Length: 466
Image (cartoon, rainbow, N blue to C red; front, side):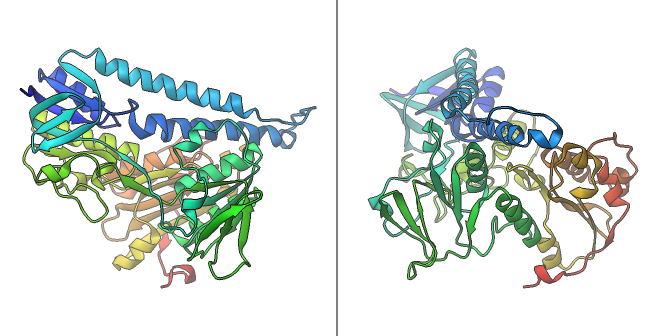
C-alpha cells in the first residue's frame, strides 16, 4: 500500500528543500527524496566548493603580487593543495549537513535517502517505499555532459564533479571547453601553479557574450599565461607518455597539446534519464529537459519541474527563483511566472563579469533604437586603488521608453555592482532614476550614474557585424 503524502519532492538542490519546508510549514505532509548528497550541485560540486577554490586561488594570486602593493614576502609563495581541498571540503560539507539537518528536523517533512523513480503520474518508488501524492515536484538537477570526442573512451578524464576530489596540482591541465566552468577552473589552477591550456571549438570564448567581452576575457586569461586554442571544430584525444594528447584539429598535428590531465567542460545534461518518466505522461525535449509552462507545470496536472532539469535556467539563483514562483502560485495566489524574470548571471573569473538583461548583439538584432554608455576600468577610481584595472563597464538603454535594456560589468566587484542596475530594471524605472541616485565613493557602483549621464546612440561597431 503506497504511503500517502500531500506533496513529494524529488531532489534536494536549491529549489527542493525550500519548497519542502514551505509546504510543511503550511501544514502539508511532505516527502523529499535524495539519492546521493543533500544540497545538490551548488552545495557539493558547483557554486559553493568552486567559489571556495576561487577564493584560495585569488589569495595565491594576491600573494604573488604583494610586491606591487609594497608588501614584501621573503620566501616564495607556495600552495598546499591538500589544505586547499580541506578548506573547500569544510565549507561545502557544512552547507550539506545544514541542508540535511534542516529537512530532517522540519515537522511534517520526511526525508528519504533513496533513488526515486516514477511508477505512474502520481506514484514514486523510493528505495523499498512506494509514495503517492497529488502534487509532485521534480528537482533532480543536471550533470556534466560527455561529448562525442574521438579517443575519449581510451583515456581517463575529469569533470567539474571529479575535480572536487583533487588534492594535488596537475602539472599541465588541458581543458576542453571555453565557457564558464572551463574558464573558472582554468584560471584557478593556473594561479595554483599548473600550466593550463584551454581548447574551445567556437571562434571565441563564452560565445553567448558580445565579441569585445569575449576578447577582453581572453586577454585577461592570456595575461596570466593561459594558452588558448579557438576554432577547434574537430577535437580528438589519445594517450600520451605524459598523460593525454589533445588535438585541436583532427587532421593536423599542428595544434596538438600534451598535458598531464584532461578536464571536460563542455556543458551540462539534465538528470532525467533514470526517473521512470516513461511510466508517466511527462514530456521531455530532445535534450532531455522536462517541458514546463510559464509557471513550471509539466503536461501532467499536479506535477512540476524545477531547477536545472527543466531547461529554463542553469544557475542556483534561477533554481531558487523556480521555488519562489511555485510557492507563490500554490500558497499565496500570486501569479508569478518564469517570463517575469530578467536574465542575470556572473562569470567568476577574476576580475568577474556581471551580466543583466540583453547584450549589445541582441539589442542590435532587435532593431530598436538604443543608447549606450561605456567606461574602461582604468577610469574607475576603485579599480585603480586596488590595482585591478582590467575590463570595462557597459549599460544599454531604450531610446524611447528610457528603460535599461542590459548591462555588463567586467571588472573588479562587477559581480556585486551589477545588482543596482538589475534592481532598476525590475522596477521598470526610467534610467534617469538611477542616474540621479547619489552613490557612495569610492566604489565601482558610483560609476553607474556616470555611465548613464554619458549615453550615446548605439551604432553597429565592426565587431558586431554579422
